Image 1 (cartoon, rainbow, N blue to C red):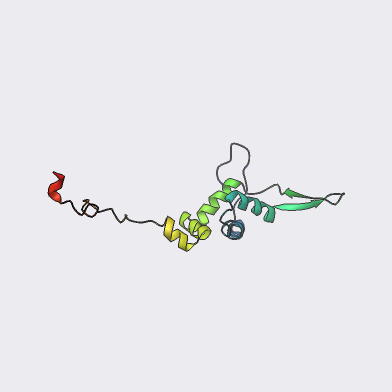
Image 2: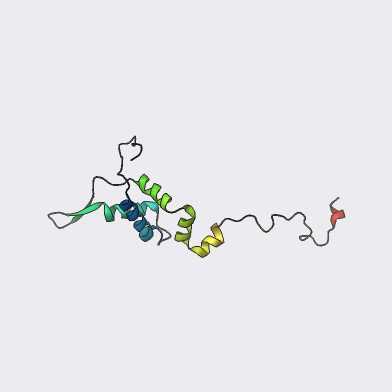
Length: 129
């Protein structure tokens, strides 16, 4: 299961079923809305898979978490393990915006620009000395 937490919260063992649940929650709640956060997706994960509704005598409902739940740290770890940062950005922002703003480039258009002759067409090499 891994190292025990010094704060007493140990989480649960992450099985293939839990990984599948994490993937489903990320696809539904995290990637579909650009403004949603990983914390919101975690809350929805707990609400959907690890909680139960309790109806009180007056008819009001209380949502109570089950005792053994994955921690936020485990959820974050497996979200990064299942989707790398490039995939996350592409899914959240879309392919077009990713290509425009976030893709890796090898240089810029002025990388090999050595002289200022294109900026000052009236000057020549002898004017610099």
